[in-house]
Image (tube, rainbow, N blue to C red; front, side, top):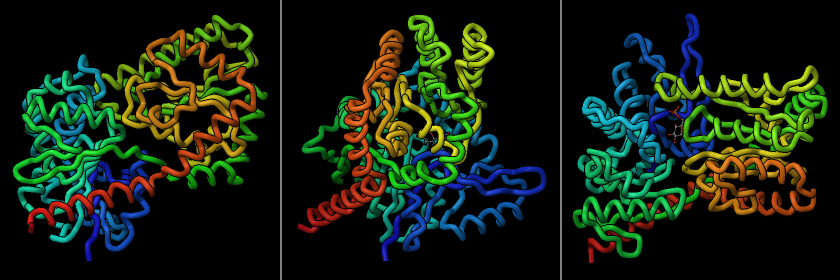
Length: 472
Ligand code: G6P
C-alpha cells in the first residue's frame, strides 16, 4: 500500500532538554497541526529535525524510538549544521531574499555547502523510509534541493513540493549566486505548490529567465518530465480553533483578563519574532493612534504576543532590542496608574490562552511587510464565535488574497494603519458581523484538510497523466 512521507526541516514535535530529562512538546506553526491528521494515518511518517542536539548514541536511540512510536523519523543536525545550514543559508540567505529583505541577506560559500550537505542528509533519511510506491511531500525553503536529490535516486518516485513562504520576483532571485541550482532542486518534484498565483507567476518567470523553461498550461517540461505548478492557499484546522474559543478554559481565562484590564478595549497582535512581520511599524502606528486620537487613551490597549524565534541570527536579536525599547518608550509616555497602553509578552502560549486572547480582542493587527500566507489571521477569524471583531490585514500577506472582507492596508503606510485602527474601533456591529461571517465561511470551507486533499489529489493526478503519456 502506498504511504505518504512528509518531509520538513522541523518535526511537529520538538524535544527539549530540561535539567536531566527530555520533554516532547508540539512545535509552533500551522504545518504541524494541519498535517497532524494525515501523518499518523495508514503507516505515514514525518521526517524532520526534532530541535535537539543529542549528546550520544544512547540518547539518539531513545529519541528515535520515542518519535518512531508517534510516526516520526528524526534527522539529527549538529551544531555546525544548525549554524551554517539553518541560521546561515536558510535564515540569513533564503529567508531575507524571499521576503524582499535583501539588505539582510548574506552570501557565504560555507553556508551554501552546508545547505547542500544537509539536503543530502535529509535525502538519505527519506530514502530509508520511503518505498517505491510511496508519495513524498517535501515542505519549505530549507529543503529546496531535496526534490531533485530524491529524483536522481528514485527517477519514478511521486514527489510533491510546497513552499510556505513567498516566492519573490525574479529581480530578487537573480541576485542569488546559486539561483540555477535552487530552481533545479525544486523542479525535481512532479508538483510544485505555492500559496498564491502571484508567487507561482514569479516562480515561472524565474524558471524562464534563469533556466530558459517556458510553461504551457501551468506545466514545465524538465528533462522529458512534466512538472506541474499551481497555487494552493493553505488553511487552518478551523474546528480546532472554533472549539478552543468556546472551551471552558478559554472563557475562564478571558474573564480573568477582562477583570484585570477593567474592560479596556483590546487590539491584538500575535507573531513569531521576525523582521518580516512589521512589529515595529505596528507599534509606531499604535503610538500615532494615541497621539492623533487622544480619546482612545485609557480606553484601548494593545496586547502584543511575540513568540521567540531564531534568536541566534543577528537581525532577530536586534529586532528584539528595538521592540523592547519601543514598548518601553510608548508605555512610559502614555501610561497612567490605571492603564497600560501596551501589554507585551515575549513567550509562546498554549492554545487555550491564545483562544482567550482571540476572544478578548475586538481588533487583530496582522500587518506583515511580507508573509507567505499568515495563519494568525485565519485563527482569529475562526475564534470569533459571536461573529464580531475586525481584522486589519496587510496587503502583502498571502491571506489578503482570500480575506478581502478584512480592512486591507499597506503596512509601511503608518498613517493608513493608524486610520484603520480608528475605523475598526468605531465600526458598527452589523458591519463587523457581515464582514466576519463572510470570512468565517471561507476559512471554514478552505481549511487545512481540504488543502491537503487538494494538493495530494493534484499530485496523484499529475503523476497518473505523466505515466499515461509515457506509455502512449
Ligand atoms: C515559518 C516557516 C517554517 C518554519 C516556521 C518556524 O512558518 O515557513 O518552515 O518552521 O516559520 O520557524 P523555525 O525556524 O523555528 O522552524
